[in-house]
Image (cartoon, rainbow, N blue to C red; front, side, top):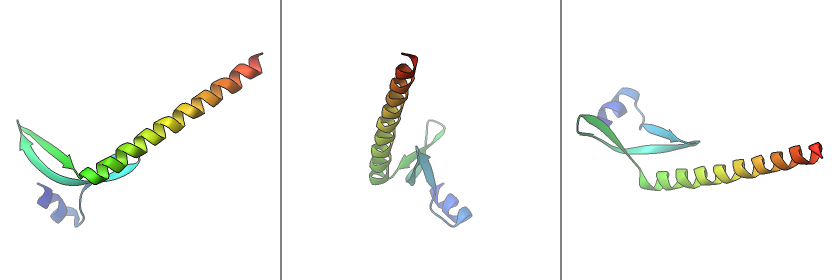
Length: 73
């Protein structure tokens, strides 16, 4: 299946994890489903970016809450 995708699009398939593109390592059938295995190194980068994005978003929400509370008082 991976070879078919590469032949059809003339490029290696990738999936988006958060904002990061991760290369597909292998696709195989398991229990009637196509299972997509991702490149481990790319996945590690994607997870790190997700964590950083989550921390940034949490800090932004905290700053916004503080600003809203200070305008109310």
